[in-house]
Length: 429
Image (tube, rainbow, N blue to C red; front, top):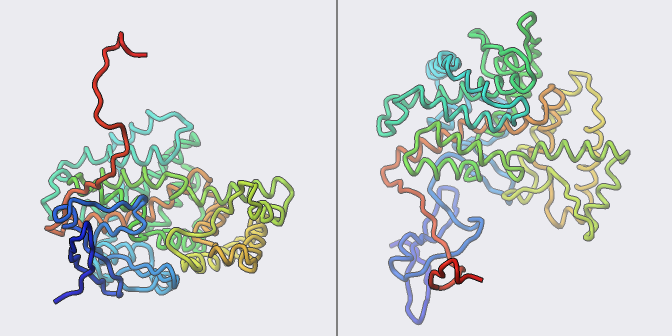
């Protein structure tokens, strides 16, 4: 006999099952609530609502824990690569050498875009945001593979997953080149995933970009740290769209659109814009901190705090060290980094921020790394999308493999006008 929660409504008691996850998380199962009581729950923003059972990523925001398939993010950051981690997320286990080699070969085989897809880039204005291009071209690419429409056929999934992971990087690089009026650079078969992206971004027809191992590793780490993060806005969007049996590419394109929002994937861009503003004003961060604490001022400290983490974001600890190491290797002296360090040191000691649990998150330092590499601000969210793609694919696969998956259809509490009559146009005031 399992545990139950008692709900009393109008003198009648209902027994609601309590379910428990493998890490001890408990939830009240309300899936039969409406049919039994005629009631629904109201939870704007879904902060207290579990939309699914998932075996992909575990987060404990109170203790600052993030694990992919049970493996701590700290171990993956130190010992793994983005592509190996992508395999772990999608297939549920670390690959053998043979599995990793086969996966890598699939990525290489599918990194080229169909020639006709390239014409999609010509239709965008030169100042089009790369996220708009990314979403549109991912969607358009699905037209070139009819087997994508047969979601019930699992035999092609491996190819579809590899094609999306590989082509999202190619589309992103092409969109950047388009925005700068530069010739398109094609991927090289001999380069690995992240190195190839940097090559397509920065090489020229007459000179290949110098691939420094430290730069490649830093960007690979950014991809890895962003690979999945449980039921965030974009992942929930992917699952929502996938629940309608939309194809993998269409679902991912929807995820890109959700990620584009400044409260989600655009946060790392907002950090750099904030640091730039502080620098241009001649401030070292002190005045800005004071303005943030002033209740009459609407200044916000971007890159601090998190919807889930109530302590230091574990990804921020990892990426802070990577940021320091990279800037030392590149001999970069970035005044924005000095301001960032000042903000962090102040916030970690100031009772105002401690009481509000405002600690640096992953966005705070990822923007500094990308700036040092030479990636422009408008591409920051695109980098996030590339990294998050394996997570989206993993959640898509988890849903399609579950025979109990239903189409998502949230309810609402209607607060509009009660029944009224239609008024002919001549009688309206």
